Image (tube, rainbow, N blue to C red; front, side, top):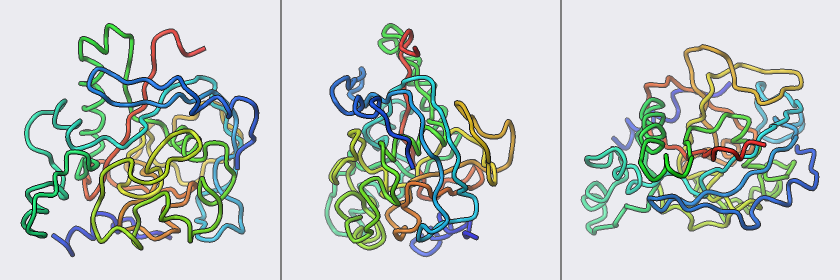
Length: 280
């Protein structure tokens, strides 16, 4: 069983995919740049195996394999939301622990963290960001609506057609090519997009910051599902992807984390986008 307090608790220390032709469509053109410069990769509808096999190293008891079908295409942010993008929509100073003035005091230099992922964000903060972004005149005119991805959408996008422990394979020795994690992060986040993307053009799906999903945490969903949304109510929200302080097991594609929605810890997010008329 995971230590649910592991993510925010550290703050006190420092302060199997059923692949088909549709999978080849993602990451090949069709990217969207919105009115504030955020890049989104096209994600096709499709079917995949969510969860992990019983022999996967680091597997947890809430990762039973099940077939999931996503019936509608959408777009997902190529990157985690950055500090600059967050401040542009929400106003004020970045809430992030790893922001310029903090790192200046620690490292003796201005690190310029505008391209770092925003962190120290609650679930409500992330939802509010999506709502405000959707309300921008240019986004409304383009028919673009923003939201947090569901947990199923997140894993589907992370896997990008893979069935392995990580989206690039099973060998954790290669994790540093794709992710900022405990073994290479120097105990901090890093600018988005510096590591190699997955097959669908999505960066930092493993590591850097934990990412909020839309769902309430469901201990072990079973059985085939179509466009699952998670439980209708609950007390814990889902996080995915691992972060800069996570070991390889917590960065796996199937790894599920949960936490109180009011917690902020070192938590961030990326945004899903739906364009009116494209859900066919």
